Every structure is written in C-alpha cells, then in structure tokens.
Length: 212
Image (cartoon, rainbow, N blue to C red; front, side, top):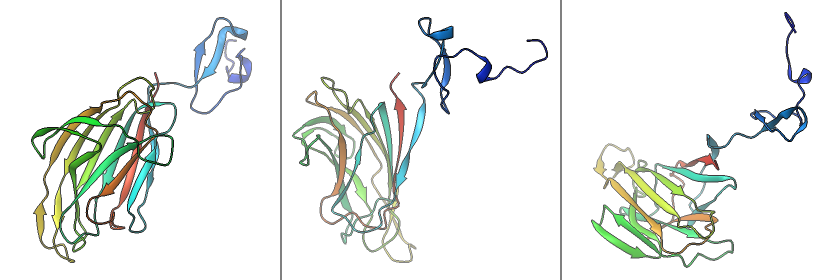
C-alpha cells in the first residue's frame, strides 16, 4: 500500500460509516473493526425560546445521557415583585411526580425536605427586562432504582424599571441535593410561585454527557 491512499472503502469494516462515529476494535465482527458511537462526550442538545407568558415550561430528558446541564437565561416573571421559580421532576405521565427531595438551600440556609426544588431561583419582575441566570446540573434522571442528584448555581441583577437603569442585586444561590425515591424522572418542570414565566425570559439551553 506504499504511496497509496487508505480510505474507508478499502478497509474491511463490519458496518457502514456514520458521521461522528469512531472506528473500534470488535474481534467477533468482519475484519475486526466496527464503526461505533463514542460515549462520554459533552453534546449540545439545543436551545428553547420562551416566546409567550407561560404558567410553566419543561424539558424532557433525552435518552442515552447520564448527566444534563440546563442553563436558564434571564429568568423573568410577570409578577410585580421579585418572584420565586421552583423546579420539579415529572414522571412518564402527565401529572407531576410525587418524588420528594432532600437538599441544601443556600438561599434559605437550611436543609429542605419538600416536593419541589423551591425558594431557590429568583426571577426578574415585570417592571424591567433584566433577570438572573442559572445553571442546573442533573445526574441520572432516567436511571431506574437510582437517586437523581442535582446542583444549582447562579444569580445576578434584577432591573426595577423599563429602561433598566436601576438594578437590585438578586440573591446568588448555590443549592444541591437528591431525590428521596429511586425512580425514573423523565422531565423537569419550571414554574413561578406568584406569576407566570415571562416571555422576557431568553429561554434555556441544554447540554448532555452520553452514557459511558
């Protein structure tokens, strides 16, 4: 093969190539080589805009991933004062899961035992256009007979008027914990306590780490 190009067509591989796959050793397959999806890498799973005022929004966890990073951008409420946004895992049905959570809430400076991740995320008011942003890390939501772990961090300023010339310092938060029951959590829902989630919210982006 001196001075000749070696391409995929000239190799004896057991299956057809797929973009993004890697060539792996498989002794039982034809030629001993197989194209396979590589696990463990961080993948961008998309961005969702909040285009209207909504009572809640939720993300359905993509299959094949162990760890998720959800970034909430410029979180805003239709309430006239600083609002609280909570998060709750949901099961495979249409209703909210009965899962309870044990977690440390830095904002409340206490250990919490509730049915939602509450009193953690502050949202901007209807008077302004600037709100805080947060990153939520979630581990093993789709695993049966395992606890779902989560960690939240973020915060930022909140504007008090329409020209955003005045900012209140929102409570920066660090919070984390786990579900108290070992069940599959197929979705996570975010909802405001006093108002709706405002369309001024820039939306949320999601990244995932594939199963190893």
